[in-house]
Image (cartoon, rainbow, N blue to C red; front, side):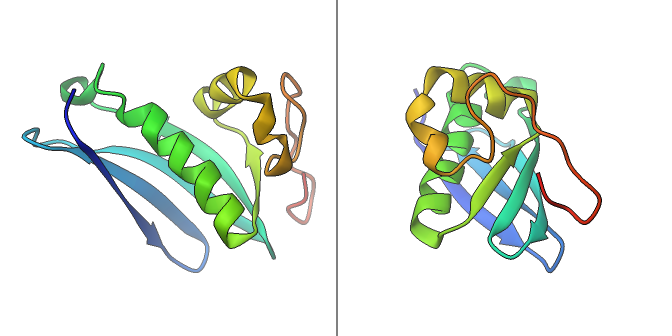
Length: 112
């Protein structure tokens, strides 16, 4: 398995975590939207064919959860892949806005 490195790109409204694997000229990403103070939605996780099977997508979600704990924000898990990983890690409940298996909703004004 290749070594995975992850970086975060952030702007005022949106951002993404980017995973790259040593020796592979491709990147996987997990995109998010700022939804309010201390709240983001995990919107989409994608990995090109070149990174499938490397663990890059799982590493992105793990990094997101670790970042949420370190930085003090909560996650609205809109992305199906993030929700699927959460099902396997119910201990992530401390940073998620819904319980494992619950469908998140975005209310007017950005709250879950």
